[in-house]
Length: 392
Image (cartoon, rainbow, N blue to C red; front, top):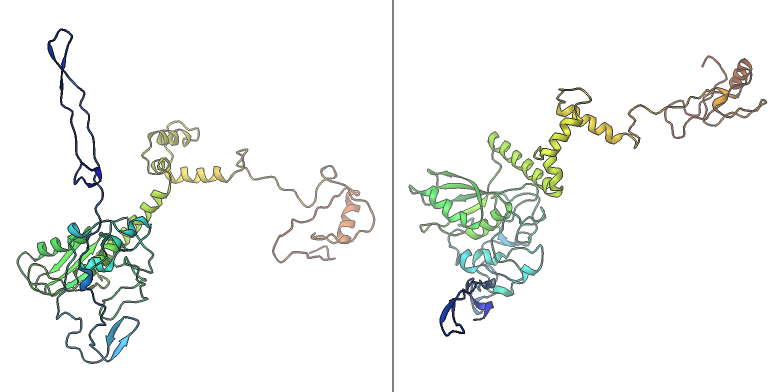
C-alpha cells in the first residue's frame, strides 16, 4: 500500500511464526512485535466552486456614483441599504474545505477571502490560506487577516474592513430569528470560526454580540456569516460592534491587553529567568532569602528593599564598593599635585579664580598652592566666570 495515499495511520503487527527444530518437533517461536507507522499526508484544499461557473461581472448598480475607496455604489435611494434582500450563494464548510495551499509554504501569508465565503475556485493552487485563524495568527494592525488595508475610522454603518485605531473582536449580529434556544443556536454557528470569549444575546430584539478571543477570527467570521442564515431562513446582518460603554467591560478589556503584553514579554525572556522572577524557582527563592538578610539573623527582607539593593549592586563598579568615589578639590596641598612656578600667569581656562586671586593666595600660603581646572562639560551660570573682586 502506498504510504502517501493511506487515509489513516496504519499499524502492522508481525504474527508469531512456526519453526521446526532439529528433532523434527514443531515449536512455536515468539517474534517481537513491531509497529510500522504510516503517516497520513495532509490533504489539499478543496475546490469550493466550479471554475467554469466563475464570471467576472461588475456588481449591479445600486446608486448613482461608484465609490473607488469602498468599491461600491453610493448615492441614490436604495431600498435595501445593507444589501440584505439576497442571501449568500454559498457557505464555507471548514471540515470539508480546509487543506494546504501554496500559501502554507510562505510564512506570514494571509487568509483567502473567497474561502471564507465558500467561493474559492483555486483549491490547492490558491496563494492564500484555506483554514480558520488560530490564536497564534497575528498581523500588522494596519491590515486585516485577508491582507486588506484598514481605514482610520469605521464606516457610519460599522460595516466594511474596519479601523486600525482600535482592536475590535466583537461582532454585531442582527435580524436573528427569535426562538427559545436562540443563545445555543448563535453559539453553535459562530463557534465554527474560532474560539469565542463571550456571547451576549438580546432575545427580545433578535440581536447578539459575539466576542472572539482573537481579532483575526472575528474578521474571518464577519465575512463567513455575512448574509448567511442560522437554523431558519433569516438573512443575518453582521457588522462591527461599537465600543461597549459598560465600565466593567472596559476594565476587562484593559486587563486582557495587559495579560497579552505580559505573555509576550514572558515568551521573549528565558524560561529560567521568568521562573525566578515569578517565584517558581526554589533555588532562587533560597538564594534570595540568604543574600537578603544583610547579615541579620532572622530578618526577612521585603521585596522592595531586595530589588533596591539589587539595583544598587548592579550600578556599582566591579570592586563592589558602595561608597561615593573620592572627588578632588580645586585647592589642594602641594604634596597632592604639581607645584606652579611663581610669576605672572595668564588666567586659567575653565577655573573659577582669577590670576590676581591666585597670586594673593600663593603669597598667603607661601607659594604652596596648586591649581586644578574645573571638569570639562560642567554646566551652570558660573562656567568660565572670572572676577577680580575677592568678595565674589
